[in-house]
Image (tube, rainbow, N blue to C red; front, side, top):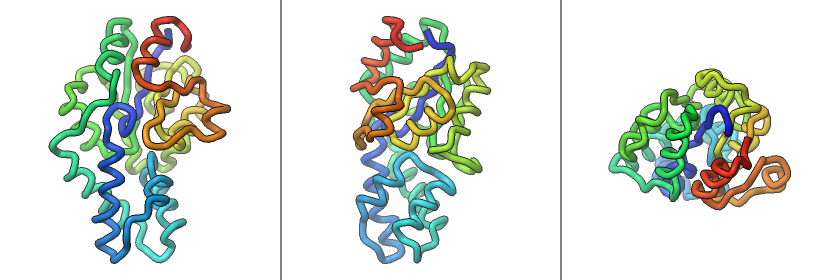
Length: 217
């Protein structure tokens, strides 16, 4: 059994990614632009300067900080009523709690959104540590957010499981030396993920089953 588990949130624990995608349309409309699906896909799982770099790559003429801030505000408003939990989340959390495995959330979303989703989903009690990538000098795909979460849990990266749905998150987990499992949501695994992730699972149910069988960590 692993010594700790670090959860991404958007697309991994909660079905928020369709909302983030939808939020791009009114966000870009404020600067007279139309929705760009390639931009939305490239920005998925990023935050802060990392997201701004993606925005500037697609839209070099815009104020990337304004776009990022507007996107987060728009998405937050759209998600206040709650979003569905991903299949297997409750079962995985209950299993880890029964095993006495400490858990943390490490998400590119704001602290307010992390807390909102966990409370709306009845999952806040499972987590002693919540780490946000907002304002972090080196967000995903750098490993800093996961390293911070591991330090908070008091576990070594090599003995900690990172659960991610995004490609940038997988890169961050691998770079930090974590046991990295991808549970794809809206983006399929790329060559890097297939070659470097510890496992690629279809659902959180599969993650639970692998942990119970001693096949992770």
